[in-house]
Length: 141
Ligand SMILES: [Ca+2]
Image (cartoon, rainbow, N blue to C red; front, side, top):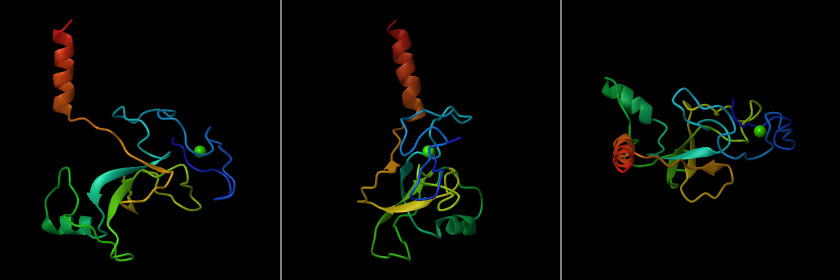
């Protein structure tokens, strides 16, 4: 379940999922890790540069890659002079008529200065920081 586009794209967003356009965060159930909005609503910027062959490069290196950090430099053969980063998760504009990438395993791309209204970012905190914060909170009580 995610905020996506229903109706005739792009003219009519019927909002059958409860939202025509963008929705406030956490309007749909979290995934199995307790994370909200991993798909749909707004694309999520990542810090990874975009290269279409990045995963092929990883596969050619063999083994299992844990927490891949993306390539060292961006490259999009369709626009080779643009610097692009990876987007994940799709947006409220995704529909099976136009963009079916509203799942986390797929990736989009975007030029770094884009100002579109269906793109956002997620604030994260290292797990060790969370543990330290919880420990500090518990010791001050
Ligand atoms: Ca919607």
